[in-house]
Length: 389
Image (cartoon, rainbow, N blue to C red):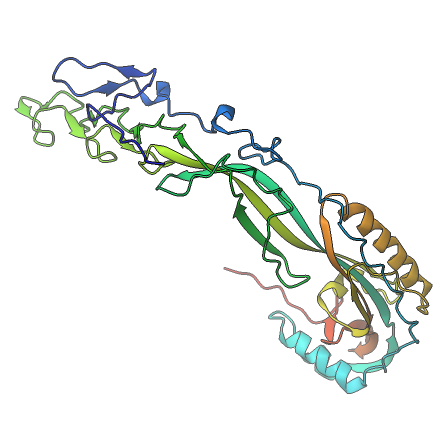
């Protein structure tokens, strides 16, 4: 499709602007003040878009909502129960390991003295190992919206044939359980329209000078004189050329980038999301569960399938119950609005050691947890107040 040239007879481009004020013969074109000026609609009008079969609910900006996936053409593979797990345990950490972790913890705190960590006497250590069950459901969602871009001679194919359905368009799926996003121009939906912001004129009135091309001289306040002398700043004109539009009274339209026309098309947004939920078996050590979110444990089970079967035969019934609940919740939550591509369930045994120690005749505790030997010591006995100046 060949673009028609846009003709203009004066530097203000004959805007269809209700604030336009015709100037006297020979005078620069003037516009009403910026407050009364029309700058074009902020959103494209609904009439700008064609009706595309299969995309009738698509709108501009707001999208068409998430599109439910079609029913699979073939029966989905059934999940397979995993083998029963034997009971695992992790040997308790040594006193040297507990002390070294404590010393490193204190060294990483600018306001902590290292004395309790180095000189405190460990009196007892108790293991409170716990299980963490995690279910991950990797999903794909699709949504559409009308989009536009400046027209630079791109292919125009709207209505040349029916566009493919939103779930029939191929997309490059990332590795499983890795979030991703791809935006695709839907074939056979592209057409050319006049820019709705500048009304096809390619330029817009300058907001700084209200389309006049000049502004009142700030030195003489528009009089052209300073006392009895002519103002040297504006050479007696009383006005300065507008620096924003270089005196033209208009600026290039940002929406169409001075083209006057837009390529309008439907864009398809494909999102891949790893939806993850954890369950940590309650342990009575006194360590808050949220501390465990940033540490790892010994992996006892890893089961990855299109759809997993809830864990069976695990020695801790709380894990079995959590697996059944989360698998059911994920299926209900994600199967209606997205396509489930893969699921993965894992069980970790997270080591937690509660350490009792004495320093200066008083008893204190700290926790060492995770494969990383992280430390939590809320009642560390030798801290100072640091003030940032």
